[in-house]
Length: 345
Ligand code: UD1
Ligand code: BG6
Image (cartoon, rainbow, N blue to C red; front, top):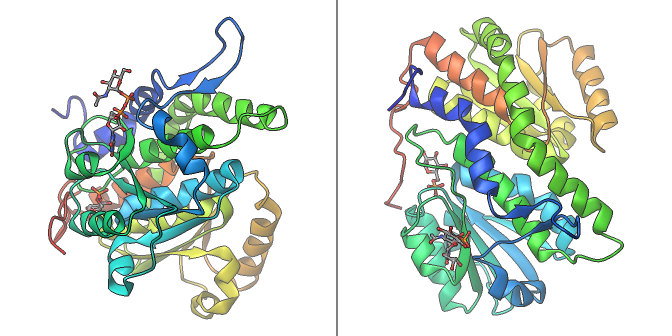
């Protein structure tokens, strides 16, 4: 039921304040008698000791789920102090990459049924790793076959392009990072700051959703373009990849997400008067570096647009991809050649 919305993707973008609230419900605790902020993930609590002892943590996923893991990687590294590696499921299998008994492997999948991710899970189990699932679907193959895990509880997602599941995956992975990380005097302030920000996120998202008209205007200006490049770094590297993936998937426009630090090693050659570029920048430790990227791009006189986002929200880019698709006249909920759940290799 789409309710007042024209498309499922639009509905799912707009219901993120609620889906994120559900993902955090009962898991983040603010205050109480001790006034202590804490995290409780029922699906992980018996395995935290083993995870903390792992030699490394490996994220495995496909498509948007991979991007969600990439978005969560910096916070997991910071809080756990364990090396975190990224693997695309099919690539891990193609390489038959080494997996060890003292690895913790986190499988991220909205549907819990993606063939490549499932095959990677089988491979990791055979190699004796601790397998953790992060999925939206109770009873799915990944939920059943992992040793433990967390349901993201985002509610069912109908649009083929993942939107609300993406943000819930990131929020759940941030909670996983808090659960794994040591809760000590020296980390208390930082941890409580993160918990407070997560709890405030649904309200912030309500604010960001007000950019709808602005993003529609931006989409209007891009309607006949051939290509759209997105630059991000740090926390926003994943935002750039995911923003570009959305534009490819639904708006059927070539789009690339680029790590801004790599700009001079290739993409700069394509920059001219006409190439539309989105630079994603937030007030974080990468802010001044991104300002310098903007200056360097401006010097090449490309058309530039700036999207400001808050941590953990690629929402303006979801809105952009949605409007671009509708304005270009394509099917937003069932893009050409794509399936919600890819159950073959
Ligand atoms: C669970 C209940 C929830 C209830 C809550 C009360 C379920 C599905 N969830 O939520 O309804 O309100 O307790 O305390 O019954 N798991 C995996 N792999 C995955 C995902 C999950 O093995 O990919 C396992 C977890 O380790 C856990 C179980 O599935 O044993 C449920 O996970 P989750 O729903 O995240 O747990 P709770 O949030 O505690
Ligand atoms: C498909 C979907 O390609 O599978 C994407 O169209 C999704 O939206 C990808 O990101 C991975 O799916 P899942 O269910 O494993 O997260």
